[in-house]
Image (tube, rainbow, N blue to C red; front, side, top):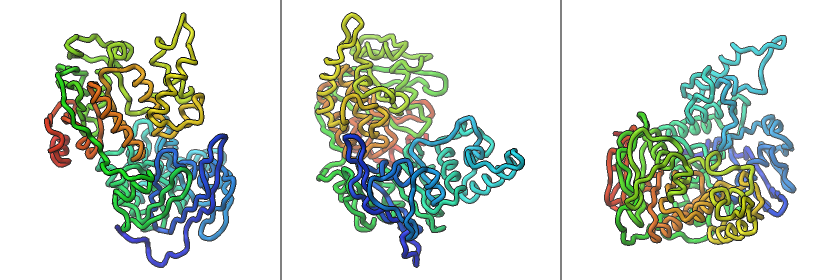
Length: 501
């Protein structure tokens, strides 16, 4: 790990005694945070620990109830996002703030356009945008609409937008969540270049392996309080996890081995264009079938075909020997198949509705009488899952969009558990989720498998696939390129060799 640039002894940023409360929630309790010039500070904590609230205070989206913020020793007042920009702070949120229809360069200068006699100086802004991309060292088509760019390219546009504001501090919230390993490597090169320029970076991630590659120090928040800040050299993966969750986790992947029964779900020659081609496999009673492959390999597309979200061109699906006709998600749900989608925000939840209403949506027949919803029964059933899954909500009428990522995932889990589905497809079940909540989800997967369910777990995190699967199916360009029958003896190298085709 490269050390922080020598001679830079004055903190770039100091947040002291930051306190913030919302109705019913004391989100931050006297948080302290120090960032040095040319440093990458990893900010860690479980979902709901207070990381996002702290960053929104720094970015001017929230005003603290108590506490102070200093930049290079000078106390600053950040009452709005515009104040944060003027103070040299750039926030790159997990959900990008880009207008899909506008070009890369237009997004970079949106709201800060340079004009002459009321006309935007397009040539000047295109030139400046290209200079920013050259500075970062990445090629991005500056005239392409951002909606047509890859996730990695959109990430670069967000970084360029921050740099265009002459920032001294950049906050990156889960920047690698949807990137391939090659794209993550490119992102780290960019961060190292920013660090060499004296820019301070606050890096938020649940991928602990990344922290050891890129961070100088680690600051941990738990339940709204500062737990400590430690040089990366003094930490191990185990000690980092214990700081975050406040308890010992002896085995990060608590896979329980138990007898596996006969085939339950059988997929034969499933296909849709070039996305999924002649895919055949089976999932047995009590089995966790891991499915992995590079981005674009067809993993999610296959899950959508099984769930009826997309229509297959070819193939058959049977459950417990009975052929299924799945033309819609309604058909799949009725047959006992459920899907926890890759993107829980846009596909798994209706963010403006309450968590109780989200829970009830696929279970309305159970809670309805003569077309009227029995909200008391719905609430009572949901309360049982709130306790069992340790869902952190102030009340059941809380909007789903206001929950942390981990708690949103648990709400999605709750609604499918109420359906008592026989085949459960988890697509990236722990993406953007803290290590403690991951552990809880792994235990739940174990319980479902032990109960005889057939589990398909799609994941791009190879340690997770190796640690939690019984068998592993590897895909490449829409095809099955390998089936590893003993996941316990497989290696990441073996999986990658198959995944690259």
